[in-house]
Picture 1 (cartoon, one colour):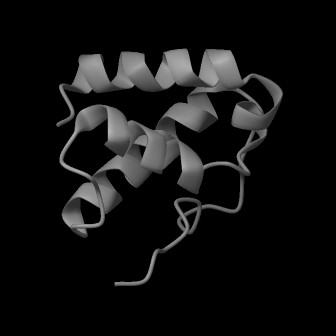
Picture 2 (cartoon, one colour):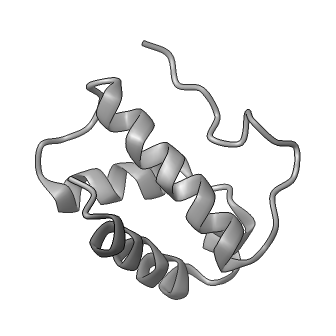
Picture 3 (cartoon, helix red, strand yellow):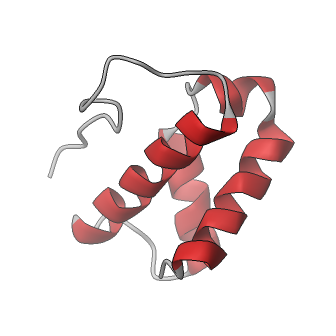
Length: 79
């Protein structure tokens, strides 16, 4: 299965936590649904962050982006 850009649904990506959270959620679910993700949640997180490596918020604020990602995982009970 080929990977579809998480930004395919929009041409607007912003350098902020909200934009990152929306793309993170879609990418997390896409990788899970496609069977491309590791079973371990921490490894899956790393795979998602790798897919989003060109997102402006992850580039400019990597620590904050990781905090947003872990918050989204807990908030949405993503597995």
